[in-house]
Image (cartoon, rainbow, N blue to C red; front, top):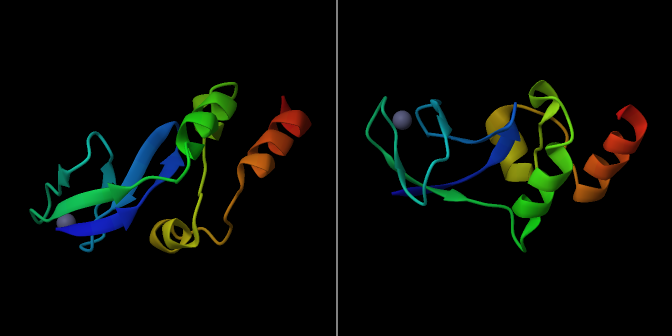
Length: 95
Ligand SMILES: [Zn+2]
């Protein structure tokens, strides 16, 4: 079993497998359909995920994106980590 950080893309909570498959996080343990690895997804700490959903649900699904940690940024190839305040500011600027 491996632990992997998570992020939100197009309204879905995702993680990735060491084999590079991108996986939807549907439970506390998920099995990679590509290679069979069991993955324990690491969710953002301190209830941030619930608050992130509340902020993002005001956006179109295509804009419901959040990379909460450097580890997640490394996995999903983005260069930018966003705080919840960043998400709130984006809402103010675009909604
Ligand atoms: Zn895999």
